Image (tube, rainbow, N blue to C red; front, side):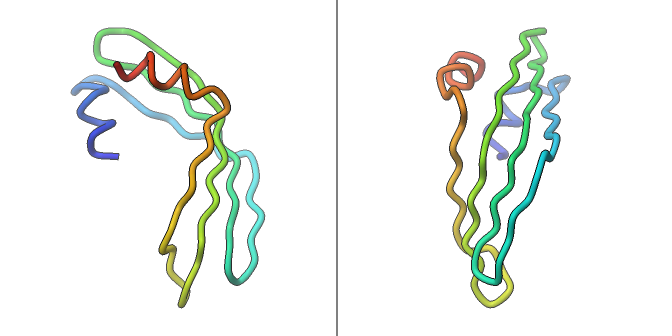
Length: 77
């Protein structure tokens, strides 16, 4: 995440909106929408699902699936 903040620039922003959560003792899944703005004025929006593996009450692994990864690649390049 620190690298993303660097790419956004000092005046950039990243806003995540939580749509839903499903969880058990071992896993959690979140559905989010992300709105991003770079300091140069470029903006982007994407949806993502995060699957988290939970062990001993702590998140120890996260898998991220982005609806359209090309949007993110273009925005961050």
